[in-house]
Length: 204
Image (cartoon, rainbow, N blue to C red; front, side, top):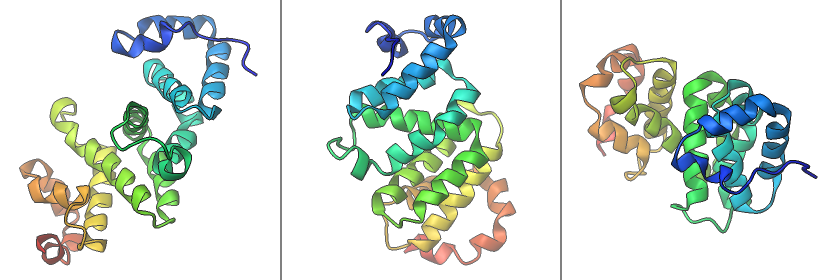
């Protein structure tokens, strides 16, 4: 059982600033980590939400790596682990935000985790993973001046998802290729051999 508990006002930090929680983490790092561990394992969805909000505020690579499998697993298997949460719930919002942060900071590691769960061939897993890749590329327009490793991986994953599931015309993968513009021309050139068989599928 956790012996340390953050005051309720601290759990609302993300609406304002993450600086106070980072200062607290410097002073009581072990306690903060223990609290995250306690919260993310709790059966209450809002306790899990509090855990990922803490991870987002701390923005610590070591902690993100430690809890990466938990975050990705809970989000991609939400149909089993968070069955009461509807698609647009705040709990899922913060899990998606944390998954995106993980992919940007640890792209290879996070992609490997995602691919493990995609082996389930479950629609929810497929949709949530496509959303992570899609949001990685979409967020570039607002924050990322250059194409990095996370963008290259995301582009390739969305390409193959669109090619492998051309019948799903509403998927985020096909939606991305339907509207993407010249910003990703170089990535398309790099993947030309992959794209040769793709246009027919993507236009259906």
